Amino acid sequence: MENMESRILEAVKTYSETLLKKRVVIYGCTFFTKRLCMALQRNGIQADAIVDNDKNKAGKQYLGIGIFLPHQYLLPYNPQAMVIVCSVHEKEMLQSLHEMGYEDSDILHISSEMEIYADTLEYARRQMEAVRRGAEYYRKAAAEYGKDTKLLVGPKASGDIFIACSYLQAWCLKYDIKDYVLLGLGKNAKDIAAMFGIDEKVKMISEEELDDLMVAYMFLGDSMNVKFISEWTLTIRNSYFPGRQSPIVFRDKFKLETFRLTENTSPQYPPYCRQDRDYVPEGLWKEKTVIMAPYAYSSPAPMISPDIWAEIADVLSSKGYVVYTIGYGEKEPAVKGTRRIQFSYKEARGVLEFAGNFLSARSGLCDIVHMAECRQLIIYGRNIRNDNSVEFFSLRRNYPDFKGEEIIFDDFERQEFIDYVTDYFER
Image (cartoon, rainbow, N blue to C red):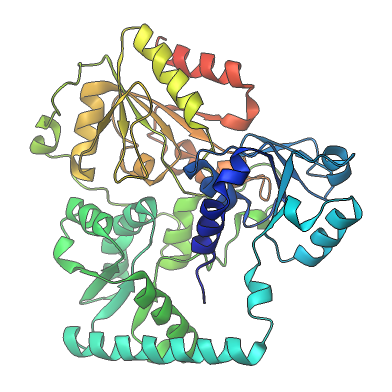
């Protein structure tokens, strides 16, 4: 199936010059909203508003953006507005926009996959072709590693890999797993596995191979000696539980569902070795450095604009701190007024403890360094589609030994947020 995220990125990039001149409105607080906001941010564009027909969402914020009913924000007709439509309800949305006076030139319509695959036979043909490719990949892997070797298809996200690895030993003991291979998507899988001393168990796999293997497994089932620990195939859903706080947290997904372990099974975290403490990048000031991690793509990650990060860095610098940005690749540049820093996952805890201060959007790195002895301020974004999202991913709930502080970006006004963050490191 065509990668929807890539199509969103391409559409926003293509129309970025037009969007920069307009008031950008996203129609629908949907599955695609966060992907749209991330694509816009990568092109230096901030959405001005989200409109949604659900009265329960109106008046709230999502990713720091206000949500309105369509008629509240779009009427009377505003020629400066550019409305982005990307939803399975696109036909109804487009019709309502036309009824409010908006022309096709006022709308960036990114067709959903429901429309692309309206032809069921074509969709079925593509899926069966994926089954064939996935089965062929499995046949070759089984021949290389042995048919009795369990193929673990690793998580895509770093935090998922870290938690999964912490339960592997208990799983092997309980179910008498003699041998396994962890199929990982990228270097992060191997780096995290190295922390646990199992990097020799990791073999690289492409995203296309992973997707094909998944489709094949869905079709062929247990005839394949495969275990997936990467997808949200949750039997236990956080949203199943009423009230603000569910008894289930993110770590339980791996313990109770993925690995079928008992409630009292404890995770085994990697040892904190001497050499991991000793590495200190040049330029850090002991306990007077703030290391910022603004780049995060997980469910509760906040969508904080680059100018807010830059203002935070500027205030911290004026308070006598040296500020660094963790960033990898051209899509993760240093925040304005900071220097970029890079280090391995094994080195991360030692670096943060020397620096003394860690400011991060909620991401997988937060799981990996949750035990670091330094000031940690972790920022979440409210998930309008699941009020329990923050509680589900909360470091404090998942890791009782976490000593930092957690806040929700959407609960603050801009200046109030900046003041709170910059004052935190002075306490």
